[in-house]
Length: 243
Ligand code: URA
Image 1 (cartoon, rainbow, N blue to C red):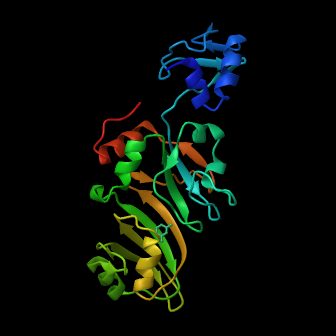
Image 2 (image 1 turned 135 degrees about the horizontal axis):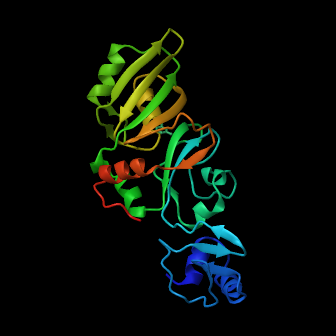
Image 3 (image 1 turned 180 degrees about the vertical axis):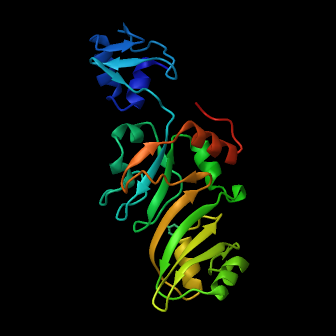
């Protein structure tokens, strides 16, 4: 990739800005000052230094975020804060995008990736990637609800496939349950509970395919995926890992 394009993609500046920067001698590649903005560089392996500081030049990154309530799952919104506000700007510049959505009031595991094909495949209904949620609802749950979830539920515009409902606690006023689904339709979990006469009062995702929300990750914090997690995701997506 041309050096100027690499720098622009990393969000270091506009094309004009970075060309000026390179020509001024502020950029070093593999320890050598590089004054040609058009210099072809291997962005996967080259070490980059800008104005005396090492810059992480990786364009392929995958992130696990512990989403807090109150943020939209969107790359950008004119009025409301989004989950991208929790990450350094470079993740936006390099095109790291959420894989699917969690509602504004839903918390828990959100995956972001720069790999558009991986993103697409993990969301594809044919892949049957399991998602596990913990839901709190406004009334008791019993075996009839477990059966209804297992049979599949008519949600009006579509019929949700059979899902696993595991009751964790149940009392006359509220219940908590673990729900495993492989689809990811808009408001799916909330609508499934509505279909059996319960309202979700709290929703948290603890698993997405092979990824389990890292218990060491406080709400609102993020980290990049480990090599093992990345390999597991590509395996689930039946893809070669993009570097
Ligand atoms: N189902 C929902 O209803 N909301 C979410 O955020 C995720 C799944």
